[in-house]
View 1 (tube, rainbow, N blue to C red):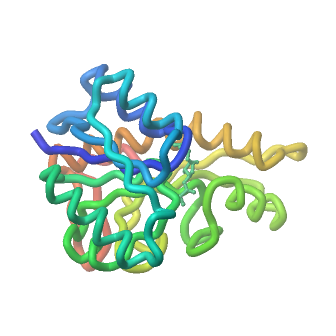
View 2 (view 1 turned 30 degrees about the horizontal axis):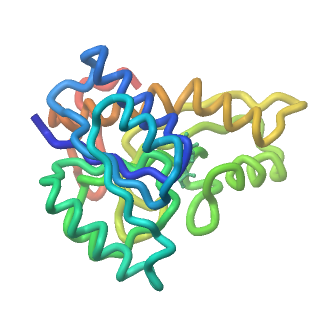
View 3 (view 1 turned 90 degrees about the horizontal axis):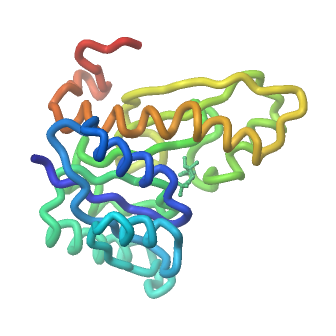
Length: 211
Ligand code: GAR
């Protein structure tokens, strides 16, 4: 069984999707063993508590820079014997001291079709605002490995939704979460835990992919 450590910063609906998938037996070969939050008092921590998953709060505001914060995160990941780290709505960019230690072992969910609307400054509702301002007709979410550059690691899965004429950032966020993120994140995590993701030339390939 692989130890899955989820990193969160907010409401934790993606964490909930992982918990629900695990309960349904859909995370084959892995178990969520710890939740680490960058903020106290977020609902994601309540979800961990309700499901008896140990949690740790490492507040981002207690650290002056990304490097010292990332070192604290790294120490906790080692303490937790993490095999897979899932950024499930984690709003802090991790320094390369973490990404170097866990190559192709950190998975992120980004609420747009990478390489569009991604990178530093693109997170949460800002991503959907930018997509609507551009006038895209299709958007979606990307599940990818994390490397030293923001939102630039190998893509594992992507899914799309159509953008309606009267779409708002909030409605687009909801549509993408419900139709893509909550389905593809647990799927990618299970594929990882079953060793069904292969890396060739820096790209990720899913074995027996239906996509
Ligand atoms: C999700 O839409 C996730 O894709 C996004 O924030 C939301 C978190 O929701 N993540 C990012 O923007 C990361 N760059 P949640 O806390 O309910 O899972």
